[in-house]
Amino acid sequence: MATFHLFSRWRKKSLAIVLTSFAQSLYAQQTIVDTELLGLASQTDASSFIANPATMHLKNERYRYSLNSATGGYFNDKNGLLDDFEDAEEEGERIRELSNERLLFPSDFERQIAIFERMDGKLFTLSGGNVAAVALPIDGVETTLVSTVVSRLATAFDYNPNDAQRLRTAPILGVVSPPDLESRIIIQGIAISDVGVNFSKTLTNFYDTRVGVTLKYQGVRLLEKAIEIDDYEEITLDEFRDALKTRHHLNADIGVYKAWKQWHGSFVVKSLNSKSYKGSNGNVYRQHPGVLLGLAWQGERTLASLDWDVVPSQRRFGRLDDEQRVRLSGQYKINRRWNISAGIAAIVEGRDNDALSLGAGYHWESGAAVNMALIYAGPEELGGSIQVRFPFWKRD
Image (cartoon, rainbow, N blue to C red; front, side, top):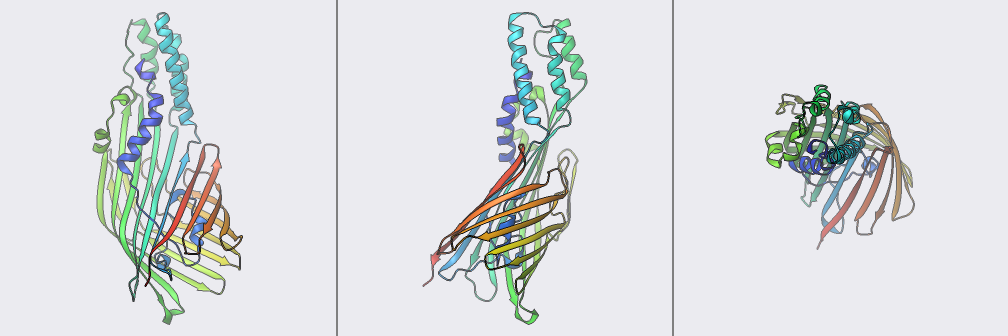
């Protein structure tokens, strides 16, 4: 029975098609005092990395250019929706085998109906993305090419109660092929990508405060697709593209950074240009400026920071909630090469649970570095990130 055999393909096919159709990979960068490495593992991928335009430019005395890139992702199936799809697939296989042995009775569908009812309204979410920057050797104003992409995806099962009656009456009516079912898989996603140029400078007349602005060309992609489970096996990439709405506009981020003795303060406003967009099914995404605050303390070998999304920069769209959290993180430098870090993220607003993160990094003499971090909020809710810093093109 084709209706019940679609669920294993769902797990492999849907994630590949959807993420391919609306997400992209770009690049990333770092700060004056590595405080942003502490937020490397985030439930909204690595988007918090190099968030402050005032600290984005990265110099290297031996090399003209510096590339800093981070990428990450987060998986949240705390409702167990994917396990339910597995159960539905196994039950569909059992019914198929049973139908080859004898005529089916209405009672044969009861467990399948119970699984559908259990799946109703459950949600599975993914987030992922990339952030990057290349510092340029330009005198006067520190200049950096920067690009980011943040993608979020929500998938839900919308059960139609009439499907239970359709399944029970099909054997009575002598229907040989599976009945047409109207339960649906709902897929909603948003991807925001930026490509721009960052300018930053230290204002010596204002107590060495650093300021920065990132001017960027921004693309907002909204995906909305409802697929009846009978039609799922025939869905094509072109149909997903038809459900994708894309808008482009100019935007800007601003940031301020101040260091005094062992303390470091950070203030960022993301995406100053407010916009509203509609998806293909009418859901509205309202993009408003996001505000980020950070406070850090640096010792000889230790570093601690507190970061707060005062106003969330990732907004609601359909089943995707606003993303807002507070992070407390710490780092310890073991020696010249190695450092370890840990943190806790408390959710102010959003679907995810509070999470713990652990990380480690290695630094080379040239200024190159790699840092990795994992984040854990439960057996079905976890993610991670990796950051690479690579200086190149030796100076004369």
